[in-house]
Length: 584
Image 1: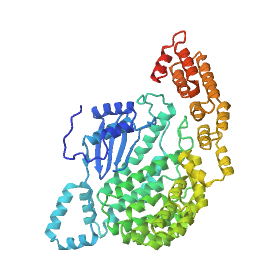
Image 2 (image 1 turned 180 degrees about the horizontal axis):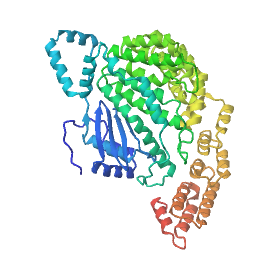
Image 3 (image 1 turned 90 degrees about the horizontal axis):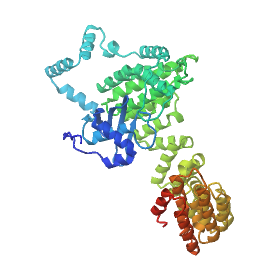
Image 4 (image 1 turned 180 degrees about the vertical axis):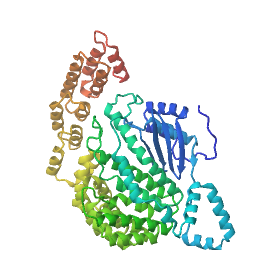
């Protein structure tokens, strides 16, 4: 056993080793333990209930884990896709359970007014001592201090601030000149399966693109840690602009096949997501947030006023939805953002969720309702939120109106919700339609039993007959309706279908002779297969077990089962399967 570190973290996890075993296949868990014991997990940090780290497999993979009380979320950058979590996540989770991580404390946000008041009360000598110690700890700050002291301006930002245009130009040039013709080839047997050359080259190409982004992303992270939102966003916006309108790079194997721009955009969106998470942990003054909002809308206006061409940069405001939601947590920035959206005439479905967030922050119920009503028919999530709001407020007529819109547009997403929440007496037609849809897509027998109470005899027949090609569900409904003759016809239509035992079961003692004859025929045919093996016998046993349930055929069943068991030449595998099934 790997020794426990007995560190000071304690085990506050909401998951156990048993949970991880359940989430992984046996092989993945075993190989994950091997990685864990070989110290392959590195650099684990914890912020709140979020864990991040790196696991060294055939190459380094980034991993994360979110430990919510009711939900465990995990992710890894490896290509594993064979069911359950990968071995890297197993090792990562075991290391977390072992307590081997660095915990980064969450800093409570300060009140800007309180800070200014306290700052004014501190004497000048103490401020200077703090400045000296701060400069001693950070060479970058020293350079900024010298530049500021030697300049004629009083605005530090004018001297050392990042330049959006410079970042845009540099990243665009770098990504436009990558060479994918000499990608490194490496063997990857980590998952025990063959990978095509293009797959290996594709991963190497992705790494090459990410290497271009890395210094910029590191600078953004550093700025955010220091609370310098404005420079962090100058770089971020430079990346956003500079990754547009790239040439369609490729190599002789067409590793991107015309999708280079899309690939780069997807990588950028990954970084957007990670940066958004970091923003939520940063202390943000109202002024800093408003400065960032101003910067974003300045860039939007800059390109909005330019003549359109193939090289034009386009700002999709929805790309910044999560960023605005993370940035704007106070009323002053919320009002400022709302004003900017209106000034730029950007109120649309693309800003709907930003506007709803603003309404939440402002606690403006009217703005929230008006916005949700305007865009509910265009967005399923907004419809769901609005339905919940009306349900809590007991506004039944409004709930029913939005419920119909939601079901008409997204029946798969709303059928079960409406079944559970509609007043079935007031909204019988919508309730029945939701039931029909849910039963159809989920093959739910319990909900079919509810549905049939609302159908006429002819409607029931028509509904059931729609599922003739979905044999098991069809037969289950026929059994409820006692339409046994049609079940027999369905069985006889294809006696060799995979689920034949499920089709036979309801009619074993209604049509005993037919069922006995069919089961014998199925198994005689299986015995004639020259390529039969243990798998064949395991399938045979499924129907053979039914023979013993035919009450009027017990003697004939016993004779047939013995004839199979005593087959000459001897069949040890068949005998073994029959014994395990208690057939003999």
